[in-house]
Length: 332
Figure 1 (cartoon, one colour):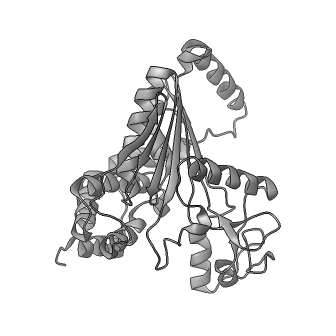
Figure 2 (figure 1 turned 60 degrees about the horizontal axis):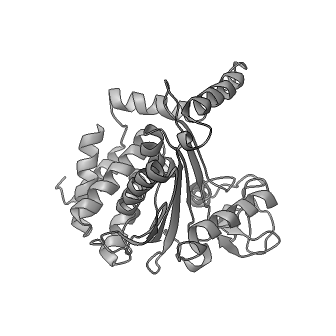
């Protein structure tokens, strides 16, 4: 299936669940983009969960994001309990305008939901020539160092760096060793997981996937990864008034409405060393990296996947296609 067809189908599924037209379209666009890039965990697999959250009232399907605080280069956007994508579109637009006016911008989002692949939200900023950094917190998954209980989310960090004659350099990473979905799959299949992926409820490393789901995800780099997760938690919550990871319920289980926090920072290179200096410096480093033949720049594989999907379409399983059609109210 091609992107336009899928976007229409996903938007209809979300609209049938109770999402406004604008919210459904913005969400569909982001989910299909993730699927095109091979990021299935942030793609079509989220549609059923989003639809259920809207249908049950856990998400406000009619929410209209609003700027509730601002001061020159900064603003805070209240997502009003809706799906995140409309609020993130507003945050990106505000960051672009403010960074071009002031040289730098910081836009926070509060009372939000799962925002998917963070790099998606930064792309318009990098394409406009701005360096962009994005953060989001999420329901608790990582324990404090030395603790047993999950407190911090997986808390992804992403950055996008514009280039003159090439697509932006994009870096996007979660702060856990592995996606929770892989552990969920192992538990479902009764398979063990590698040491270093997770801890059980007692804070002990485990290879038992079922025990891992009642414990914590292991942070990348041990204590250093936990400290990064703490930093993201504070940036996304203390500055916006959203809820910490441990105050949000899991998206995958019944629970109350989410109040996730996101943050986007944008910097105009022309306001510092200058655009010419910036581009010379970034290309010097990337050229040095590529002197080693085995080095692949971040995002290269993803761009290849997107290009193939644009040409040949997006592979969608028959089960997924039928699920989407059912959610959209189509007959078999």
